Length: 216
Image (cartoon, rainbow, N blue to C red; front, top):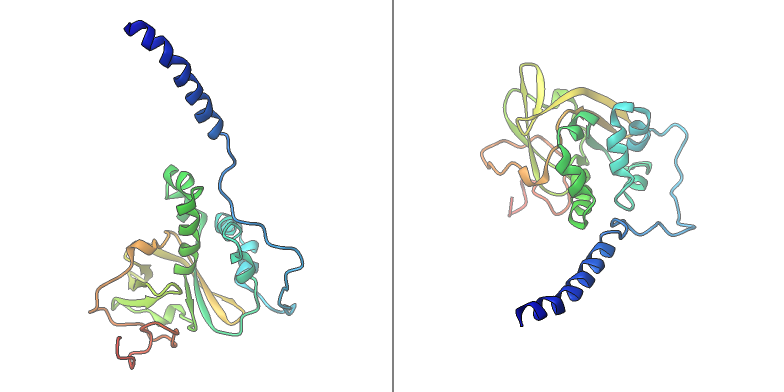
């Protein structure tokens, strides 16, 4: 009786394995394509955007690949800015230090959301923070996703979150400045210490960049 039951179950298991195998061949998750005839704001020939800079630097090729994944980010970073900003650009070394898990995670739905949040976390709107804006006193900076990163000059080099070193500072772009860093700034590792002083920044709507707001 037991042998007959086993023989009856085997075809069902085989069919399940076949379905599972077929599901494994599905295409990886991706963003919807950008519709045709979308309006693109004009850009002056003299404008140097973040995307222009990243495209011109071989050591930022992995960052360029990430910018081209989340829909709209490449276009946003190629827009002629009418505001000031600071951008910390992770080098290829920064991405290579993430290991094999990164490439596996980045292709998932949650990984793609993380990539978009990651780019925003390296962008500081409304403020041009040059290397002279930082000192040996630990301070915190609010990023484009309203989280904080720590900044401090240690042995003559600017460190972010005590791990990411600025390897090339004060690269000028239109309306802003770019610093190349050797380690990614993970949004989940933001600075919470309320005792750290804030670096002087322009007001970011909805944030605590303005100390006069009651909730700051």
